[in-house]
Length: 159
Image 1 (cartoon, one colour):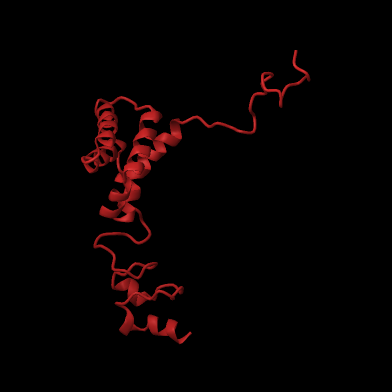
Image 2: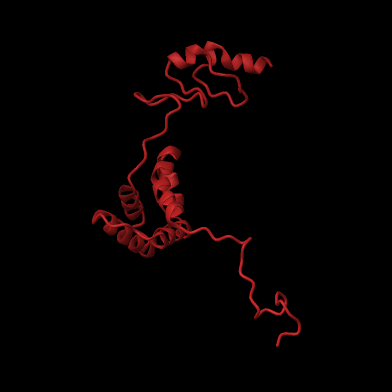
């Protein structure tokens, strides 16, 4: 318990306290520290606010620039970006392939390493949201029963 009180005292205000789960005191908030992480906030940011969303065209452009070392990913990103630049809609399968290839080749990992977590989320979210908006939902609960399968046939023996 004394460790928590020590973390809240003004002399430790500049240090990160791992075990402190109490709300941030007012003097930390007045100094410009983030309430959750106790890290200094960038100037001009509002506590609790996320980065504004990135346009899907810009998101595919960022994936394109970051995938310069991977021709397969770059080709998919180029195709998606060109379609968005022309004002056309992009099929979810192309975006799904883009995310799958980027994940498999380590491009998403490189983007996550290069940018902050909030920026990474702002880059990837529009692409994933578009996939989620277009991709059909396949239900496993309501599957068709085939008479060709002897285990699920309505009559036995088939014939």
